[in-house]
Length: 165
Ligand SMILES: [Mg+2]
Image (cartoon, rainbow, N blue to C red):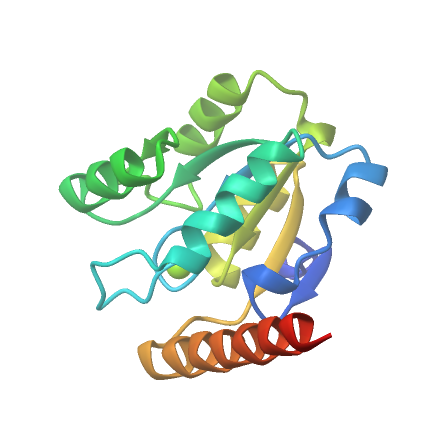
C-alpha cells in the first residue's frame, strides 16, 4: 500500500519537469491533474505561462489528457481554453477515469506519466495503473503569483540584456 504512494519523480512545480528525461524513459503521454497542479483551486484564470508550458509540451510530441476530481463545468471550461481533452469528476484514485484517459491517449501504460500534487489521489491512482508518477508541490495562489512574478522579471532582465549586446 505505502509503496503505491511513492512517486517515481518529484519536482517543485510543473515548470521544473524535465521532458527530455521523460522522453528518454519512453514517456509519450501525460495525464495531468488540474487543481493546485496547473492552477490554484481558488483561481479561474489560466496564466499565460501555463498555456505556453502546454504548447511547449505538445510541440515536443507529448499527448496530454487532464483528469480532475473537480466539478465538470470548471474542468470543461479549462479543457476548452487549453484545447486539451479533460475528464472531470474523476474520483481519483479510482481506476475508471484514468483508464478512460489512457484510452484517449491511445498509449501503453509504460508510455504514460501522471502529474499531480496529491499522493492519495494522483500518485496512488497512477501507480495502481502502472503509469509513471510525478509529484509536484501544491500550487497556492500566493506562491504561484510570486513565482510568476519572478519569472517575468527574469524574462524582462534577460531580454534587456539581450538587447543591449
Ligand atoms: Mg490537485
